[in-house]
Length: 235
Image (cartoon, rainbow, N blue to C red; front, side, top):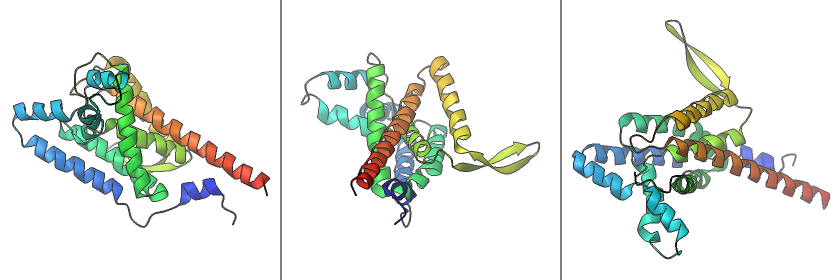
């Protein structure tokens, strides 16, 4: 076969996406339940299911058995809670655009791992960064940012179809993924520097997730490429 390990890893396709729609559906259902509650109960949901940086930081610096059951679970539950329709819609758009392509290449389990484990690790990194904060952080922004980073690591030369405003009309164009994601990253960087933690959303989470996604993907690609070359040299 002409295709090596790296090529198969980035070009394998699954029959139909399952993980991406499932994640989106869970987020939508969680928001429907959340938005139907009175304000006092909504705050209770955020306090219980949200990721509190100070609590997670204490957990990470303490004994492994101390407080992991409840506090550690918030690293995952916080991913599915959103405090506004705009917050949810923004995350779902990026999840759908980038998550579907990743799932088609790597499969359902890999996409779930990227979202859940990547989101949890991102929340943990933010907790260490904001160790004194007692404001619960919610939303899939960190996990989605990991997905965006993985997408760039897998498909750096891909073009993304967008409808761009041209006067009174919308013009469809295929824009390099590097340009689209680079613009998004620059915006997150500006918000991180000048924007506070508002609405239980930390902008720093986006940068941490993106960096994690790109870094992990590039390391895996490098390891697979080295393994392929070692196998060829051993023939």
